[in-house]
Image (cartoon, helix red, strand yellow):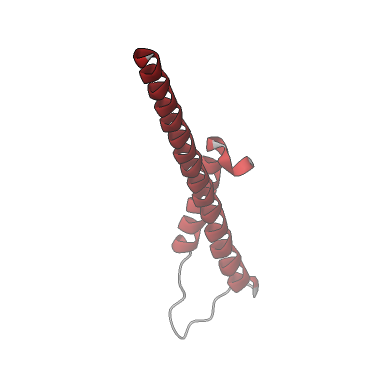
Length: 94
């Protein structure tokens, strides 16, 4: 799966943080003042925030996938060590 690649996780996190930073850095318009930009300003704000949430969510999903893989390998390793210990004891006894 593509989300289990560290490079993809890092790129998604960087894009999400960049979009979040952009969203936070957009100047606010004081009350009673009309913005001189077009009607697309609200759409841009919503799209930027949605993009930031989506990409950061994707990177978190990837990190959790990596963590689950790590736990799975750790359990498999413990199981193999237990089997080897049982074989060693069987050889010592026999």
